[in-house]
Image 1 (cartoon, helix red, strand yellow):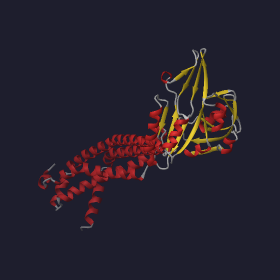
Image 2 (cartoon, one colour; image 1 turned 60 degrees about the vertical axis):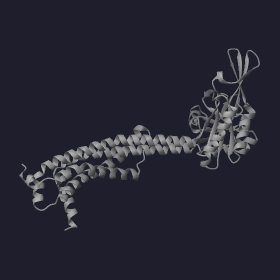
Image 3 (tube, one colour; image 1 turned 90 degrees about the horizontal axis):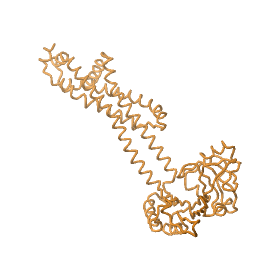
Image 4 (tube, helix red, strand yellow; image 1 turned 90 degrees about the vertical axis):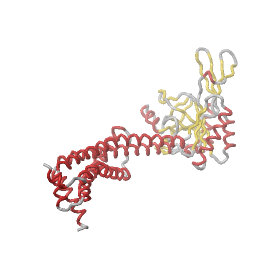
Length: 416
């Protein structure tokens, strides 16, 4: 009898719920919607976190990236050779690179030269950034060759006029009629496009890469701008420096050392430092907060569903007072009454939670398409939702079950 007792209570509870199908379904809807919302929110949050992790990791979590940027003209130190000509110098210098190499002897330092000249393809102006890099530059980032090949040491040593373009820029060049065996013009120099790469680097995906020494020899470090009868010479020795350390744990200390070097030798804001590892941690913190907010909003639906279950169960207890009195008169203990109503409540919430998991999983692709962000449903999120729905049934079903168990059998039998 002791073995059959729980089975009998469960079957009896299920029969009571099945007897009022519409009321049971409506009661479960609150939990179903709440669990579906939780599943969907967790999936979107997980998908967003994985996307951020993938994109920032592609920049190299062991990298520290320095870029020369032109500060406001009022802040740039200038030397004037006359009333109509001026020379502006800003950004990273060869001295900075030497100091960084000396301060970080175990790190790998790659230098990129920034070319400031107009880019044309088939006579049309192309908006792109041009960098002269050594062949090892591509090994510092997550690089995928879409078509063609990478730059080689032979291209650099023999000063071959060849370039690579990023995938985003390649689409524009193809619209202009330039394919991978075509040519583009940078300033007055023509370069052959030998490859297309998918490369995760700062400042977008519209970049042209040429051999480092070709960039230095063909374009130098000084650019000339003529406006309103005046001539302005702008000089930038080094466009970009990428410092790669051996281990992620060395990144914070190395970044502090480099920052001290920049603070000492640059009095104006003409160098930016990007640390992908710090950016990743910041994004992860933001994403955790966002996920917590989204789940909290979804949990409100569960709370409303739990309150709905409690209200319905209180009404059911009132409706079944004569039945409770009869059971007590036939020898049922208070614990039996308590367990019977708890089983009905937990069944409602658990079945609603299971259906909510199915609905939430089905809703993730729709939400991903609408938000343009890939959602990922994990086993942990489904298990968490089921556990929470079960807890909702226990917590919100305890009060009605306790009320039923405390009833006096004589009073209950007299109830009409």
